[in-house]
Image 1 (cartoon, helix red, strand yellow):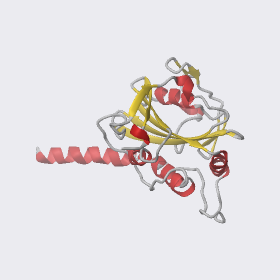
Image 2: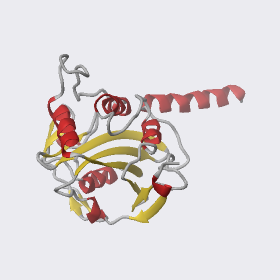
Image 3: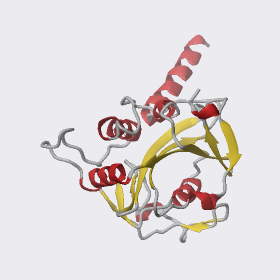
Image 4: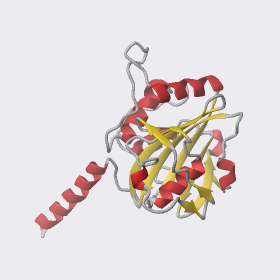
Length: 240
């Protein structure tokens, strides 16, 4: 009996390590209790054409953190979406007719162009990406939203679009990613190139990146869970 229990524990841990994630009690386990929550209108997630933004997505499936993605909106250049080792924009992943999500009332654009894990043309809006996540049975999503200066947004946009070489002050960078490393590569990208916006260490698990981002004064955190959309802001304008 003891041997069976030990094998069961090892099996669960093995799955956790293999998936690059771990188990939690809820779909958004790192949300500070003191943060204020309000119902969120999906329309409010549309881009403001004059406000540059950075969005970092942390995905959960059941009680397991499962994926990280990143989006930059630059008023002068539009949006780029980095989906490291993800499936958005890969035609073979769409087995049904074009996706229509009744909750967000949005049609996902299946003609997006993906290059080196970055959606470089017709990048998904937040609502389109949430519709995609619901389509592939994602139960929870945290979206950390940071308002950017136009200069910061353009810098991040250019790095994501074209990468860097060894002559860059921060060294070489490319967006191609191996499966299971999405949390690590996004955290490392933020650590190297967005240190003036967020101060995070490189971590492997998506939930550990989430825990750090709550302390970095996001302008808001949008949470999709159980078909509900809410946004949260820090209590008294500071993370707890």
